[in-house]
Length: 122
Image (cartoon, rainbow, N blue to C red):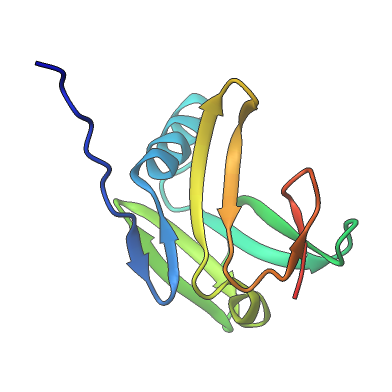
């Protein structure tokens, strides 16, 4: 009998979701690069890219007063108040398939995206 894999739903907080695979990869990166536990994963949006807006993803030691702070499987995430407007409903996943590996943003607010997947327009 063939075993079927069951997909688990991503954790959702304040309209943003991280899949278990993304959470695992963030923890792995933090461990391998000795990033302190009190750092947050900052997810954001900035102007630029071939479709108008680009996603940003990185670690940050400081929180701002206007940050939305949430937690996914032990990973603290910060999103600034301007970016949350563009990211509500977004699921952040991690892929390591044949087409490359990296974090993928599945954003229902994006009206157009570019081929690289890191730029979008609303």
